Length: 312
Image (cartoon, rainbow, N blue to C red; front, side, top):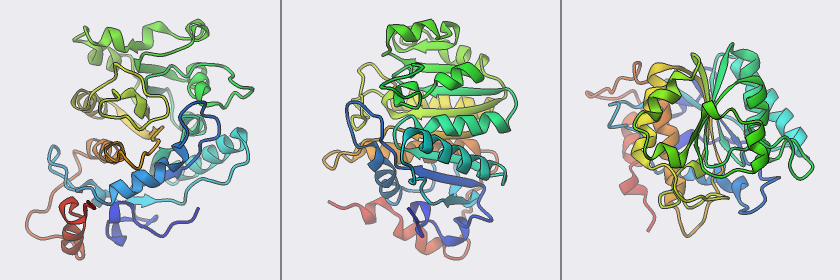
């Protein structure tokens, strides 16, 4: 899939591949999901919601898009789970080698396998922070080791994997899981120090893979396998902000958005989450220009207002 659009409708000067610090890589893949289908439609729903999102972040007093966000062509040329993983691995590694902060939006969780592999090859002593309802630690499922249920098996073997929000898994996964690095949702509810303890387990370089079913279905219903008892918005942001402040987040992905035309708030949550994560990443570098904008920004600010663009 080729694209000539700008992420969130930002001015072209902030979306060029040469100048942008950030690469956003869509991967519309849903080849192995076993219940709710539609994750392949997630990237497009995410992008549409992003175009109706305010790009000034109140909390960080910043406009992070001015760091430059390049919307790359989607990785969508695959014939099997194996070729998908290979294509993602190759593309992600190419952008890492060009000194970009590589971010991905999916797509089902198996897209993370190739990305994590690329980051592990490029960054020493990598921690993978998995925020998720499911452990995803099966070695193989339905005849493939690249199934969405196997998304973190390789990371568990080759990186420092820290799992947060887990509340659904198969008994077989307990045999490979490192329980000392797992934060189960039912325990987090009564543990005032889970954030401190999770961050303490991380090395300096961190890759975040965020499965949207980590959120409680009350705020994130549009995902393939919703599970009760999940994270809420502000506690999640609190945790993410601390991770970005205390660690070197080298990249991240957001996966498992299954859009529902009758429920668009989930699309917007995913879009907002992505932008908040970038805002935290560059919080020390962002400056909001109060007196005037770069040429073209004034029209952009007006046209990108959610109040102006919201479609009843």
